[in-house]
Image (spheres, rainbow, N blue to C red):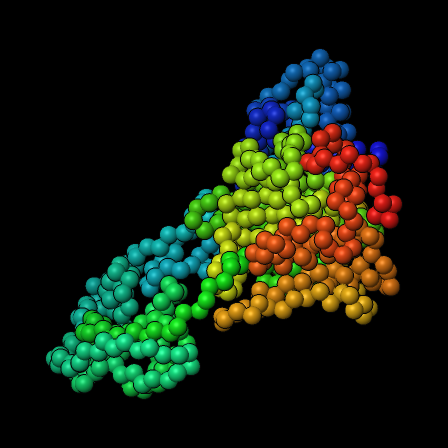
Length: 595
């Protein structure tokens, strides 16, 4: 029990670190151009000492921090300066930034001294070494100008054209003084231009077209002949561009048929447009409205990532990986969500439980707000345990999130995500909102990080953060178990039988299959608790992805799981002590096979 209490003290100190004596002024995200010099500043109004650690440095252990704080307290008392807190600003300079050396998390510790408890606080800053203009989307001829204070860039049209006489005619039948003047006009109005001929434009001959506005009722796969409506091309010749506007509001598609007329194989309802241009001006737009019988709608789908016992992770794309996990790893985060929403981070803390890798806690960072779900269904908020009754939905102060304990899980719901923790070794994250058509998950962006997206693009192996030594050391070459898993480990469920161009991601259970193989590796046998947790995890993962409410609420119905109170009391015993657990079970009897 002493070990359990020590773990509790460690987690409480980490959660409550920054709110009791004033905020630590430190960047959240800082952008730096490769090769540039940069500074990291850490400022506090209430401290006696500060220190900044780079990504390559191992941050102190909890014991070292406590020892340092106590040493400062004794020195204060010896000098009679017990209340000598003051404003401190620490500025560290880093020259010639490189991605390999300088990118990552910078951690600042502030020591407050006696008689304040806790006696230190912590803040972190994500430094990104990148050329903001490397992948810019400036328009034709525009110049990219980066602003590293905001991580944004602007596009300008300062081309500095000279007055050299070199006339030309553009594809828009415009005469320009020289090529630079044409590029500058293109930059300002964003319209595509190219040189049609040198010198002045030839005399224009008007094209002849006819109007087409047809309606077609068809089945998927049926073939029709479409014509643009061009009778005479004129001079310069007209250009025809075909567009498909899906009726479901999807992205407009540009088509390039080689012939006119051309064969259309119907794939869905929408409008096919033939846009006829001369000198890039629209002469006529002809339409074919195609109606295909609508597909029956199905329940909402959710992009789901699941963390299983034994170190298996099933990503948002339904791909599974076995990973060596220890201490803290980034699970999923978006530090610049689309639409201007606040950044969010979800970290997972892993330990060895029942002899295998297990998820010990899930920590949530939402702006300045931090809360944590811990083993034993404990909720920590700013250093205090948050009390909750079973089935009750409770607001998490300082955030737009709620938390609820039901069906043997703590469920956190926030505007951009939902997270579930089984209180012992598994967790799940879904992205909000879901979708009602099988569109594949969004591609990973530079602002998306964590194992739920991939395990390879992190600034540290397997997206590990914080300590990497001792018990936290991981081996990225550690292979998955090569033994042939038993038949009961075939837990994959194939893609849903629904129409769509890409439904592979609707499969589930790949992570459960990998987890089962690890738990049975070397002819080992999972503990009763591991087997119950695994069966719960695959059921909940598939239910979340497919919005199967019945399966999601089927706690206690998995074959290897015990009676309700037996499981609840066992999970409670494995976590830190708490006076008011989120359930009411009168018996203290626990099946010894679970322990």
